[in-house]
Amino acid sequence: FFCADEDCTFNSVVVHLVRVMTVLCIGAFLFTSSMLMNVCYGLMTGIGTIDRLKKKATNTMSQSDEEPIPLKDVFGIQGYHTWPFPVDPVFDDYDRIMGYSTPQRLAREQQFMERKTPANTPDIVPAPTMELPSCVNDFLPV
Image (tube, rainbow, N blue to C red; front, side, top):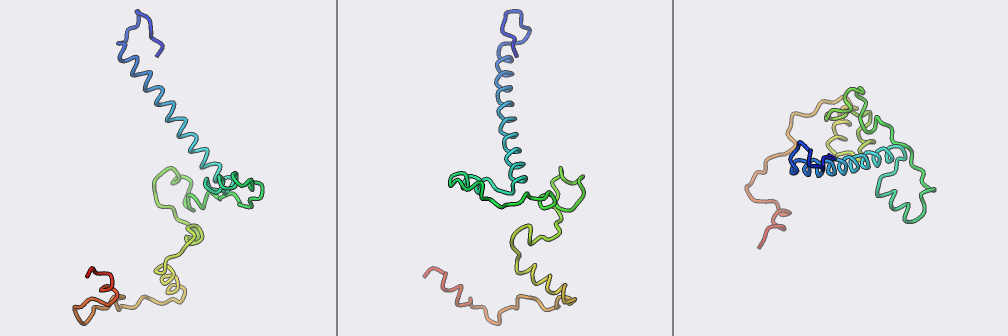
């Protein structure tokens, strides 16, 4: 890297490429470490980046009442050995973690709670005619 005299055994082009790559690697390391620290701060405080910026702009950072985010809400309830791998996490309460629930999931859970099996009838019944429903005709170009 510091080979700048005439006794250098490397070609000058290679020395310049090593210098450029070193600068790029340091920049990538600084960017990645700042992103990791941002995520760690968000987990420890429970405040996301946008919310934190809004609170700093309005000077209401001291009034925040958010709790730290438990690691099981991020990585799931599987073992620690699955954390570094890109697998789908398993959560205790999926709806609480995601903040919403789909109607299909609610229907499945209702059937499960009532100990019913799904009916063998299909949800979509074929139409007796070949014409489009009136709601579809409203959106077609004239």
